[in-house]
Image (cartoon, rainbow over all chains, first blue to last red; front, side, top):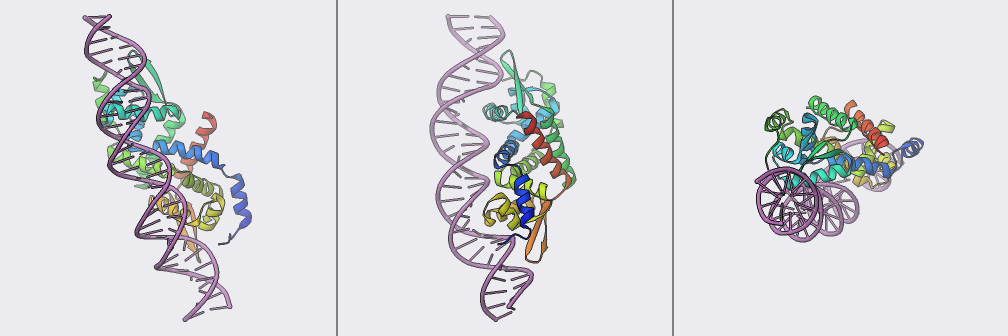
Length: 112
Length: 112
DNA sequence: ATAACACCTGAAGAGCTATTCATATATGCA
DNA sequence: TGCATATATGAATAGCTCTTCAGGTGTTAT
C-alpha cells in the first residue's frame, strides 16, 4: 500500500491530536457510551440535580449499579456531587458536557 | 430508599430521553469511545478526506483494523465514503459530528 | 488473462466491562 | 447507643469488543 499524497499524510499526522490526547478523548466518549450512564447523564441534563436514589428510580436501575456508574463519571470529571445529609446530589460538571449531550441529541434528531 | 421529591423524579422520567433514544445516543458515543476510531475521526477532521491507506499510515494501525473500524463508523452514519479507482476515500458524515469532535477537544483543553 | 493493489469480511481468542451480590461506611434519628 | 437509611466499595462472573489471521472482492495495468 502506498500513500497517494505522502505530504498531506505527514502533515495530518503532525497536526493531529497526539495518541495520548486521542486516548483521553476516547475515554471521555467511552464513558458516555453506555446506555445506563447515558440515561443518567440525560436525567441530570433535564433535572439539573438528583440524588442517587432519584437517579436509580428515574433510570430504573439498581442503586448499586448507579453508584458504580457515577463513580466512573465523577472520577472523569463529567459529573460533580455535593452531600446533603445522608443523600448525595449529582449534577453535570460543566457547560461543555451539557453542550455535548445537547448536540448529540440534535445529531440523532436530524440523522434519523 | 425513598425519593425526596417524587414529583420531580416522575417529571424527569417522563420528559427524559426514552430508553431507546438513550441506547442510540450511547451507541453513538460508544463508537467514538475507542482510541483507534477516535484517532481516525480526528485525522479526518484535520484532513477532510483520506483513503484507508492514508488513515492506516496516519494512525499507525493495520489497514485491516482500520477497515473494521471504518465499517462500524460508516454503518452508524458517522463517516461517509466515496470510491476513486481502487481507493476509497472517507470523510466525516456531517457538521454535527465535526462539532462534536471540536467541542470535546475544547472540553479536554479546559478541564485539563 | 493474470498479476498487483486497495480494501473488505469472517472467525477466533485475549482482554476488558457492566452488573450483581455481599459488605462497608456515613449520616440521621430515637 | 443502637438502628435505619443512603451511598460506596470489592470481588466475581457473564458478555462484549478489539485485534489478528486467513482469505475474499473489486479495480487497474500489463
